Image 1 (cartoon, protein in one colour):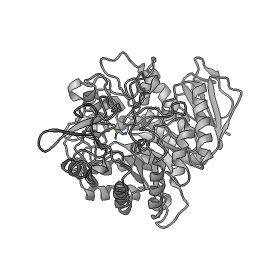
Image 2: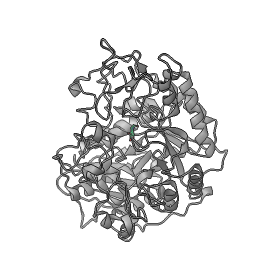
Image 3: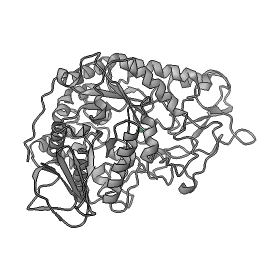
Image 4: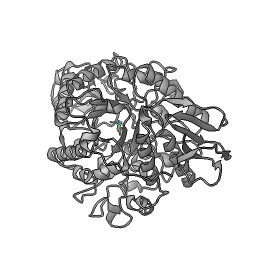
Length: 574
Ligand code: NOJ
């Protein structure tokens, strides 16, 4: 196997000089998601922060990623872990200060790492001054027009304005109380009641967000991940909606955090509205005012890929997460299909496909691939759910899946901790849980805390190196000791060593900018393709298959003899 090399990259080497254009780094980049709460804590309060990220950036450079995406660190009451923003242009004291942000950005750029920040434009926090002003203003006022305030139905307005449900469970409407103490209008929130939806029919809202984009672009960020990009515009008149295949529940029977939208299910009034695309065209122009190929990546739970690709037409966003890929089961036909469909759809609009297996909203993929009975995505798993993963199998499949993913042309996203092979933490105590989904469903759905547990840096020491104080906002399991970065750094067969090797070889062989060619003749269970000088084989079947002749570049498991074992992937070179 090839020796793992740490790539020494200088800012000059990776980041083009300011003013240059045409590099379009985002077409091929591997982007690492930092979930700031759980990455590294510098001040001992048990919550990760910006200085903690700065300290550990060299570890990400050593891993070999091109960029980091930071989940929200802006001012927020943290009712949805920062996806409830109360001031878009400041840092929450929990995470540090704007100066800390600037230092982190400078350090990242000096290491050759680009930085993408999270923008949450579908809703604000209910603590945001815009919403507080709206609450204090009269019905029909300009301030109220920035959100969705509506009279209730029923004789005394006691019923919500429509039947929409919150993605986190329960109704998507909350009734306000007037200054006199009498019941008032209702406001819309597709998520928690502390996250009122903005009204993107208001030109004022458009103007505010242009300013917010410029605020961060002026500071030097390389782009934005756009939260709920498919939900910002609602159908005129906010009509009732009862999706048939979900038994009348928008979120109840859905298997994803946010319901899939497909061409087969037209008519959803809150997701994937045509009007949303005008916003991205407007933002595209704002980014184009800046040098350095700044990029937008949309979080749009939209399928199939042909529909998703509409978000990355040449005058809209640069990238969008490929959640259809994330949701693909460990099945050779399904994997071949989603890769082919994605490449065709994104190529069709001149955009790179993206690939992703984990993030802070879904069950970590080593656990997901070890669940034999399907995975209750978005609902989470916990002590009382029947799902019990086969851990060893899940990790083996996850390593093979990543070995396939990082050979694909386009851009790939990694979620912090997946390079260590971390599983979902299933047995968090009820008292520790913080996801609003858990509270809004009365504990019926566990939600996403299990993929958000602070990550281990060291096998020993307080909170496995996450915080010197030993505190951790979610309790860490004892198995973190065996999966800590310092342990895995020393083990040639560890998941961390595999990721480093994959990323080094991907860059060395320019696979991100390559072209995929399917290969025949390896049997139905083997996903086989070629990209550049690399041939990739992944055995998703139940029996070993013969290994062809050739030089093995790397493999997801140690190869013993001339067979490719099941649930294993390998890269060959000519
Ligand atoms: C998607 C984010 O990834 C998720 O964490 C958040 O809860 C919702 N959007 C609402 O902002």
